[in-house]
Amino acid sequence: MESPAFSVQSVVDQVAAFATLYGFKILLAITILIIGLWLTNQVVRMLAAVMSKRQVDRDVQPFLLSLVSVLLKVLVLLSVASTLGVETTSFVAIIGAAGLAVGLALQGSLANFAGGVLILTFKPFRVGDLVTAQGFTGNVEAIRIFDTVLVTPDNRTIILPNGALSTSPMTNISGKGTIRVDMVFAAGNSNSVDSIKASIARVIDTCPYAQKDRTHDILLTKLTELAFHFDVRVWTNSDTYWDTYYFVHEGIARQFAKDGIQGPQPSITVSGNFTNPGNGVLTRQAA
Image (cartoon, rainbow, N blue to C red; front, side):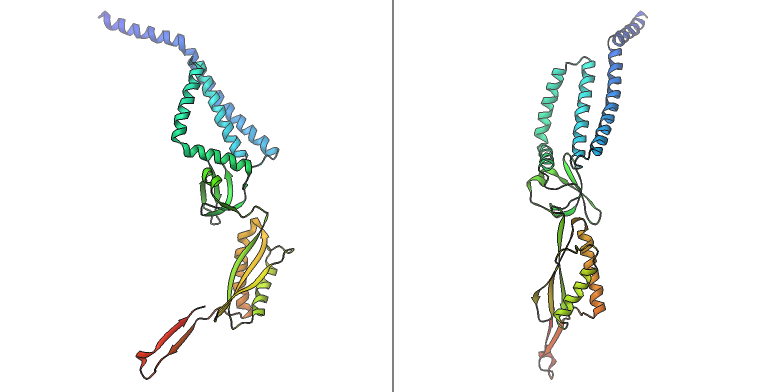
C-alpha cells in the first residue's frame, strides 16, 4: 500500500520542483508574449498613422506595415525563447535553416516578394492607376508583399502575383494622367459623311469627361458598299476612361436616332431564272 502513496508523492514533488524551477519563467514568457504582440499591434498602428500624416506614398504603406509587423513578431518570439532558457543563437540558427528549407520550397513566394520590392522601387504603376496585366484590366487597389490587387470595372477583385507583374509586359493606362479613348462606329452610306461627323461631334461636345483643350478626332477610315466606318478618338483624364467610353457610345446611339442617321443596312440580291425558281441565287450582303 506504500507504493501508490509514494508514487503520488513523487509526482507531486516533481511537479513542485518543476513549478519552482520553471513556473516563473513560463509565466514571464507568457506575459512577454501577450505584451509583445500587443505592443506590435500598437507600433504598427502608430506607424500607419505617422505615414498617413506625412503622406508617405500609399503604394509603400501596406508593404512596410506588413514587413514591420513580421519583424516585430519574430523579435517577440526570440524574447520568449530566451526567457524560457532556449539559446537564442541556436534558435536563430534553427530559424535560418528552416527559412532556407522553406525558401527552397517556396521559390515562387520569394520571387513574388522580390517582385513587390521591384514594383515599389521602380514604380511602373501606383495605387489607383488603371492597368492591363496578365489579361486583366482594372484599377490598382493595393500593392502587398506578395501580390497586387486589381478591381475591374465590373467590381471583381483580381489578385496578381508580384513576380509575374515585375517580369511580364503590362500596360499602365493611367501612367500619363490623360488617356485617349479609341472607338469605332459605323453608319449607313445613305447618310452623308458630313452629317455623320456632325452628329458624332455633338456628342463629344456635350461629354462632361472630354478634355476641352484637346483636339478630338473623327476620322473616316473605311468604306464599304453599305457603310462608312469612323475612328473616334476622345481625350480624357485617366480616371474617367470608362465614363467617357460609355457616355460616347450611348450618346452616339441616341444622337444618330435623333438626327435620322441610319445604320448599315444589309442588302439582299436575288438573281436567276424566275420561271424556274430552283435555278435562282439568293445573296445576302452585310456591312
